[in-house]
Length: 47
Image 1 (cartoon, rainbow, N blue to C red):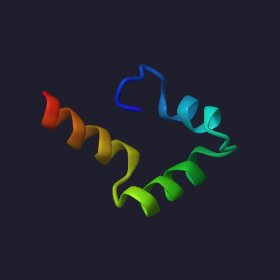
Image 2: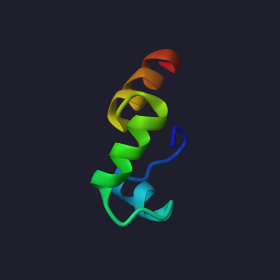
Image 3: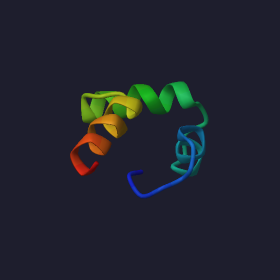
Image 4: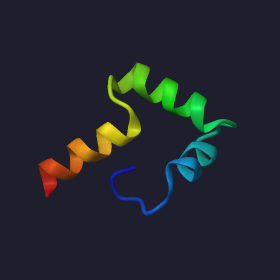
């Protein structure tokens, strides 16, 4: 995800999710951040 120019929807569908909402829900339950929060945090660290 960090090294991709794909949209969240594209990443969700490419990883087998049929719904961006479901992807976001599962992502947040695993990572404890939404995909957007995760990417913002990552960009601040490497920025």
